[in-house]
Image (tube, rainbow, N blue to C red):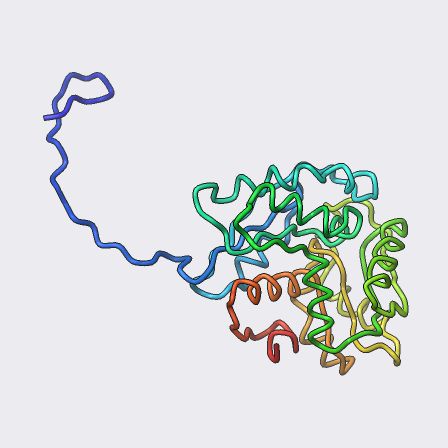
Length: 261
């Protein structure tokens, strides 16, 4: 008999010896960790909605002010590694990803990877902008138009960053929204029209930048309207993380990228 921990004095019978049945669990194919901005409201839902069965998606948040500017993005660098270390600390992740497009270009991929390696040393590190550029390369797209919600100070850095990686940025347009809380409220219908508006005849693909935007919802419609491949931040990030984890599933509703590559 075992005493009651609550202090009632009543004796409870000891547990019987049993042999539980175990399987591989829900995340038997892969475990992917995402470092989110503290105020993020879109990435987590997108990843959970679209991740294939058997793939675990896990999250931690790094400190970040609601205002998205070069200053606030730069300031969150050390928080990336700290947050990565809190994602399944007793299990090795297959992939660890910093889930912010603008932060990836402001901080730089090498710095992001170093932080992810500090927090999750056994995982393959990647970032949102890494996934975007890898997706564009898979699609054979070099001449790109970019639609963002950002301030122009962030747009300039993103365009220069991608240009330095070999992409021909034909145009980049922003909505000059400063707060992440407003970015998440831009309607999918508006994003559909916005993406079509920034398109140019000579562009190979349209890139809608920012994990806060609900752009995964309009990928197929925008591809049908423009006849071009469309890459969005969260679509490309999920594709990149899955492929790095060895998951080759083709998913519907997420554009040509997931249908063909």
